[in-house]
Amino acid sequence: MPFDASVCLRELPDHTGSPIADAMAFGADAGIPVVVAGSGDDPRPRAPTPGPQPITRQHPIGMLGGARRIVVWLDREADRRYEASMIRPESRLGRGPSLFRGARGADPDEAARRYDELVKRVLTPGLRAMGFASSGRTYRLTAATDDFAQVGVQRIGSFPDSIRFTLAFSLISVKHWENYRAQSGQTRTRPKAVMPYGWGEWGRCWWARANEFMASVRAAHRNHDEGFLVSAREPVDPVGEEALTVVREFGLPFLLAQIAEPI
Image (tube, rainbow, N blue to C red; front, side, top):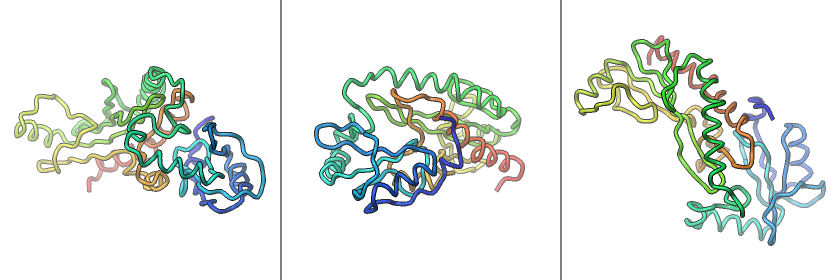
């Protein structure tokens, strides 16, 4: 479905302990689906039915962030199994909770194909329309002549059926970069957008990831998840539109403000 910032950044109450009907009513009002996490030997999510069953766990909580659905647990045993799977390092670094990633039969190449499609078909044209010129997965704001004002697409996590990436924003004055190169022996002609380069010893030098602009998203993800998730099972357009909205509403205005009147 199309990206809707009013839904994405909407406050989401914690329905834990409340009847499932309350979560369903909120989902209907917000225009996003509610699903019940599977239990027993069937981990697949299923559509809920109104009833008095209390919710034992809910994801997300706080703000909707990038969530495209509300997931609730009604089974305490399934809740405990999920918690255990999140704690085990091999689960977190490997296939992870089966409800969200690494389900049986996952194609590890499909997520990579969709990630490449997202960058080429959605992010690159969208960023060019905002005034950025692309080089690989780095995009420089062409209007900034005395600064390297850039956005970088950075892959930060891979799973059997999904890839997580974030956006990095960088503003480095040409003066700072030339001095940094001379001091460090750096041979690159321009800085990478996904890396910090000092603290502004010789001029403007600022760097941040997308989540620095979106405290509510970090809170919704309980500080564990960062950035955006490309799934082998879901279309890439909503993810790309969400990332572009972060640039349009947060990153680009900050870069332009710093160029015009630096802090």
